[in-house]
Length: 80
Figure 1 (cartoon, rainbow, N blue to C red):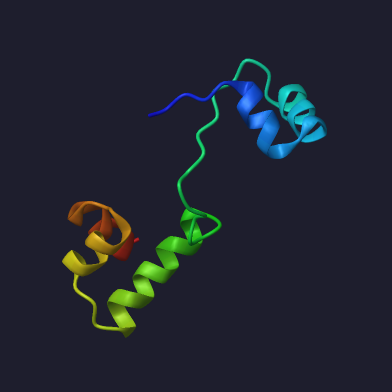
Figure 2 (spheres, rainbow, N blue to C red):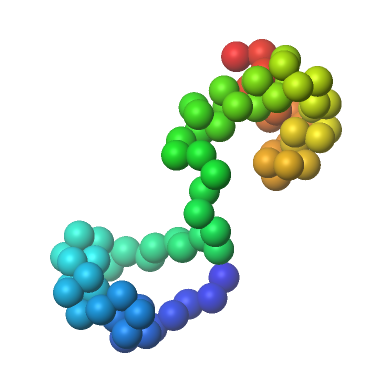
């Protein structure tokens, strides 16, 4: 995982936003994903996974591949 100096972040988001980040998250490492999440939370994602399995006839393997989850985790979600 790459580490970026804060001054580079400041150049991208601006001085004011950078200051707000520093005040809100002092001495914190922040992970920035390479894309926006498809779902706002795991509950929403899990409901979508259940719908794929029960209504769209997608296999556990297909769902696991699509979401980057283990087959065991998908089975647990489906059986919740």
